[in-house]
Length: 305
Image (cartoon, rainbow, N blue to C red; front, top):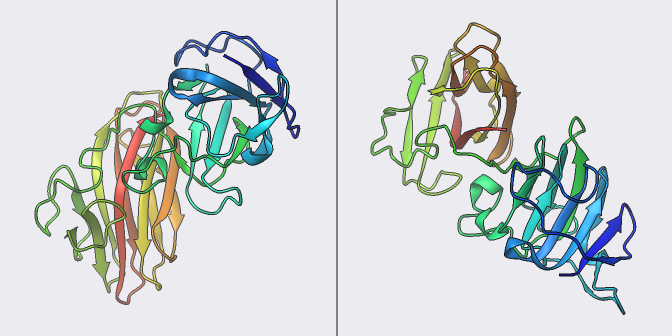
């Protein structure tokens, strides 16, 4: 295996023999934190490249491959597996100009390996259904923990704790368990109507009142654990007073993000620590503006960070 080191803002490469990346949770074998490693094949096989340290950005067509004797080709649309070192977030885009799909891959506290980027795909990874990140990365950014992260989908590394996350188990227009409605006004499920972010269904609220209405679900959590909540929302053009987040069951303050009107589905993200709570109510809703307005929500995920 040939492995190439690319220093920040430098596109020359050096060949060195190193051990493969260790599995998730095993730490990093070669260099300090705040770096990212790519390989051209799954399971960290064949040519590799090291990028970093954070914070740095790269257009992969400017990162050359195999410079032992001469440089040929580049890393554009090449990575098929990756390792993100500790305290580092890797953001990937499928276009060099950073328009279009993107995703954040978090190295966590000890580093994290993604052995096959073909397994990271679909709406939960910022891509359409049936598509994945293997062989389609054109631009990347490395950000240290605590820095300003790009507004992209966070790829979860554990199970989604939200049941029926995409409302696909809902069989009628009436919201049913595990979801429930909050507030007195009209809400329900669009079943196969073509309004969803992905797949066939989505939930909605529509009202002309000034009441609070929401779609929510109670989810058990582990105390003193950090979680990240994701969801996709779409609204009418006169929409105001929207909130997406969690209410802990220990009486502490809500963890939420506010939103108003916007075009198309937008990603909502909330990161929180559960503290002493043993459960949270996940919700998406709004204080209606007193005229006909609506909100749609789809693909809600909650996972340990």
